[in-house]
Length: 234
Image 1 (tube, rainbow, N blue to C red):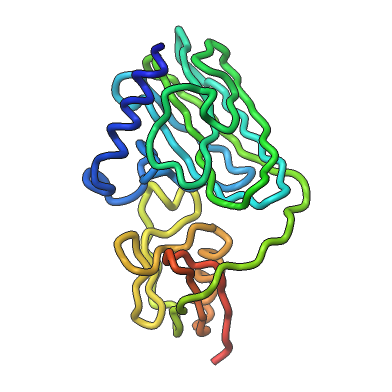
Image 2: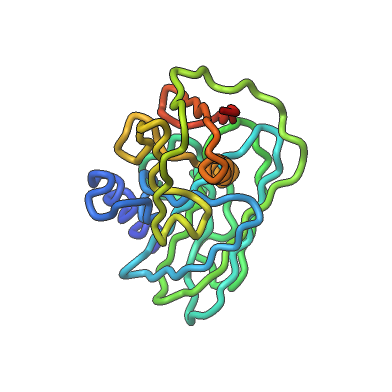
């Protein structure tokens, strides 16, 4: 199967040190998946030889009905695949049947879609693979249904104080995320103990706090992910 060779390339990529060739997430492997959010339209290009895999990550809640639609804008002799990988995925698979959902396996269709009923809350991976040259595409993720409430993770610490700065790159600002945040002279960055926020809503509130010069408490879990923001008046 052509898909097997493409997935093997994904497997090889995940064995390389994360960040060895890029400052931020580039979507080429699961360790560097690009964050996306609901109702965002992503536009990009995949190529069977130069960029055969594009991987996105999104946080889903138990009880949501999650859907992804993929459309080709341009490209000929289409041979591509849209898949959903489970939380904790580290390396590629060999067969489409090993993924949670698929919009098509090595299909020539210019449009692919899938819907998945989320049974376990977590960060999932929307995986796009290509065996064809130069496919320009648009991808959009949506969710319906009321999430089933799950408790917040245990807080192991908080960054407290004024928001000193937010640093953006062209790659992440397109999805509303910051590369680095400084709160009370404490950094949250990709290589730090505390990671930059994964959700644009949190980044927006930090921006507002920076403008308003109010104090914040950004609490994080054992993995360093910020999951709670508290705004504190001076």
